[in-house]
Amino acid sequence: MSKDIQIAYREVLNGLRGQLADIGEKVYEFSNDYSEDDEVHFRSLLLREDARVYFDNPDLKKGIIAKMDSLVREVYDKAGSNVRSLPGKFNVVAVQSEWLDKRKPRETVFTCSGVNKQYQASGFRLQDISLSLKEGEITGVVGENGNGKTTLLKIIAGELFPENDGGILSYGSLQSAGEEPDWFNIKPRIAYLPQELGRLVGSVKRSIQYSAALHGIIGKENEDAVHYIIERLGLGKYKDAVWQELSGGYKLRFALARILVWKPRLMVLDEPLANLDINTQIRVLNDLRDLCKSIKYPISIIMSSQNIEEIEEASDNMIVLKEGKIVYQNATPRIGEERRGNIFEFRCQYSQSELEYCLNDLGHTGLAYNGFTYFITLPLKISALQFLRYCSERNITLSYFQDISMSTKRWIAKTDLSDNL
Image 1 (cartoon, rainbow, N blue to C red):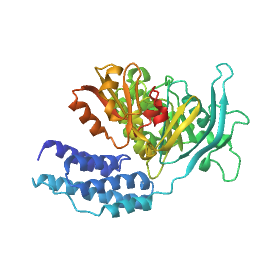
Image 2 (cartoon, one colour):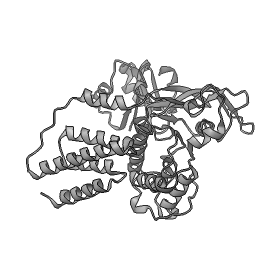
Image 3 (cartoon, rainbow, N blue to C red):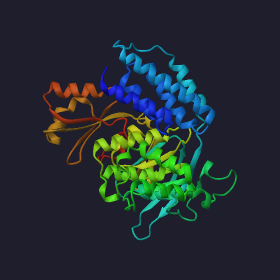
Image 4 (cartoon, one colour):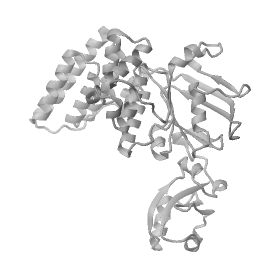
């Protein structure tokens, strides 16, 4: 048996004895690192969620700790037996049902209808905006710069007010039923993170403690909440660092931790992925999605981004803004269901006139070039694979290819194909 698992095993057992706030995460990681049994993975995942939800109940906490201890010892014993674990046979439906029984119905936290906002100096107008946000869901907002993304997010966050006759806003479960929005009570439950992060004062830990205290989290509760969120966002080794000592990715995590520690119900994030490398983007999106789906404290997140592929992968719903209007909104898995053709984006060495000649018998309804990339619209019957095979057979070498038929990118790409979507 390797020393790695022995060390990890002792650390987890010590954490169980100390009943650490993040022990569910440690048990989950230990099980995934040292077991190949899918059933073990699912059991550890359920226990992690149980720890997040029920650790404040002493009676339930005792039972969860006992189950974790049993699972950790089982993983350790099997790893030490040098017998390769076979995939466990378990009832997936039963596991899903257990989760669904624990998860409350998603509540609406924001709706608006017919919202407008006019800027007199520039003439720009956000117009006739209608949308709905639910807890436990991420909504992505995409569009070119200057099309109203920041204005929309500021209105939702209460940082900017619409025109007096600019529509109806409601904050759902954040306000008392049947009453007009009470901003004094609603605002403290909404977190807004602008694109340009202001410098935060003090060390990571002290600043998060202060943020929690401002929202009434004090004493032992403050200590536990701060410890949990620091570990959850991977800030442990930077807890004594100050703002200028952090990289861009950790500055964002720091800013998020100051928000998440007081458990907002609605998070409004303006370009949170800007200036982050691709690996950090993925880690941040995974963290946001995991936190959003929490059983005990589900959050509604709406965020804008220029990174269309990444934000689509993380979001439950997508909104496309163009010239101040919502030109498309739908659940992410349903994007492109209504399309009348397929759109492929590609680059190659041919000029547009040469491509028109080479692709003439494909029956395309549009071929556009934005100075960098080609966009072609083809009948639904022609798949991406068929198009690539067609190009290969004619020695048309593509240096880049992407099927954007079922992506919001097709509304944003600067082409003349809008009538052929």
